[in-house]
Length: 433
Image (tube, rainbow, N blue to C red; front, top):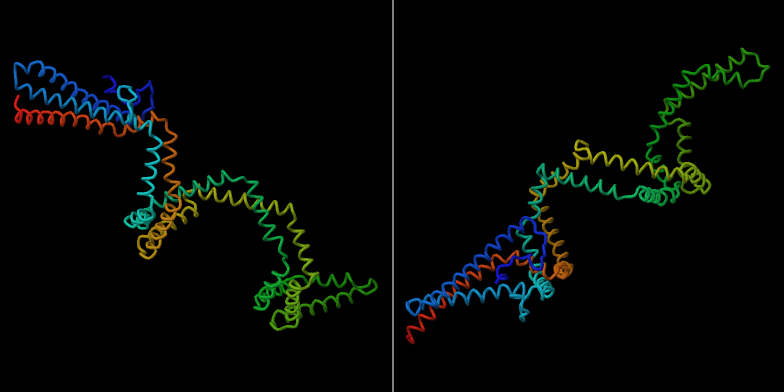
């Protein structure tokens, strides 16, 4: 009878490694098994005493019948409960140890039950319609704690991504993008089109004004430099006073010319500059030699070493700036991201149209996932149960529901006693004895 009160995990010396919660459940299960066994033992003792003394005390027949029924009920329910998890008394009786022997079939049935009754689009949509996910999420996101949590998790994702990414691979990707999108296309035509639009709108006039003003300032401050150029370029036989006169004359004329260009927006020199710039814009677009010259300049400025250095510096800068920003709660990026999250959460709470769209999107996404992958999701149950050890599976299930099942044994004892008493009383009343 020792097996009548054996707790899960003790079979064949097995120790499933209970958690504190499981240990508490195992202790409760042992207590309930002990109580059921005590009731069965009590019924057996009462039966033995009443059976022995019923000849002297006829009324003990009723007690004997009640205890006899209680024993039958207790033993029958003990057999039924035990047969779920193991062979009663270790005997290989057919249709016992149901859970260990039919573990895989139970897993398949449970998987199908979950799939058919829980993993359906209609069930998911009905449940989500009652949750109002958008407003609940919005309320949480709008709170300081929620926004801070999202920012913190986002920072962890960024740091994790930078840890996983290989710097050389990222630099190679950046270099490839630079070559494909920046270096491979010719620069001349797009620069020419851009310049044509700028010159046609007259946006270059401010730059021309600046250059003329700087030229006028230089001429005004460099009299000696201008006259020296004249004297240095004149023949050696020309008298020095003649050089001074010519140099002075050249300086005066140059000053007048620059002043005229500076004061007259429609000066011939300005028109010449406009014509040259417009012609340059056309040449950049259509003149093969000009396009080739631009490509040559591009190759010189952005050769292979320069591109590699540019890619390396770009990635290093992006990585450093982002890591510093996400690691510092006081950084502008962190503050802006947190504010954006809170604003979005507030909109979800206040904007009914947006909340409705988000709820519909969540429902559609969940329904799609469930409808498409329900077999795979439910298959996790079947595969997991299939990997479990048969005896350990039985122990785990008994640990979860065994305490409640022991009430069946207790109830069987009580109901059996009442039934035995009732049957004997009716039979005695009808047939006498």
